[in-house]
Image (tube, rainbow, N blue to C red):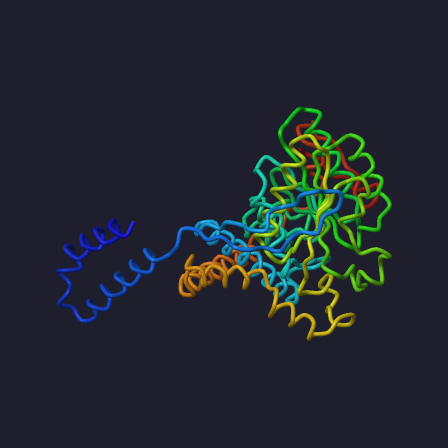
Length: 403
């Protein structure tokens, strides 16, 4: 690689750069090329890291305690997490400007969960989650502009501007569900379909620590265990269900043990490598026909439960700042990459600039794209069905539904 870069540099110097050497500033331009080439050549291609050992339930062995990270993977993870972080901060800004309205639950602080999970599964696998869904919509392939446009209720949104924050969908991503815990039985149903049709696919079914006490979740555990469904039940434990700490809401906070006869693991949800390796382990368990598995991701949200919650009446600013300073998932990945020569501070700053530009352009689209016309309100109820009438808010108002 070093020889190839030097050869390329030599060709540059022999071409237009050499002819321009007499111009003021030409030497500094060549110097920048030399420095960039040397820095790129000096980067390591991969590095191995120790990761936190997972707590186990009904398992003799768990995920590995080391993880290999390539330079390419690291840059991809960093850009993805930074994009989600900036997207959520922009959503916060647009909400406070009253451009986004209604329910809105932000994901900043928990980026290692959705990015780590996606890194460990196949595009053909399935994901369903609760209402804190923006990050998952992005990792499943939805463009930032479509997510922000959905938040602002525009026609170019990923749900045509009719779903909003809690109802975003993508290929093999089933939302975005507003009813607490109700997505868990749906996730088991998706896993049942995977098994019924003999596909080598799994379903990641996510819920929060607040939903973990719902009775329908325990009913779903039982059915999934009986039928050995290829389903990973994932509890994103961010320590607070709305404004109630887990210690005040649950007699047992060992959420990974809640499945009883279902094996479980508790994972450091602020470390993307820990999440990735644990998910690979759980996915292999499910694909091999052993049935479901529980994962508890210990994570933290920086914002309040929703935009109506300032997030500081039940926890201190000092607590939030301590998590930011000691456990931030983006900072952790950045430090690992820089300290192990997988990247440089300058290179990661360039990514930050590119991400901010992308977010600003997406926000511009989300605030100028037209709203869907009223006559389309009844559309997209069923797919590939003949048009039919849908009653509006009164019996005298009817809309035509087109699939």
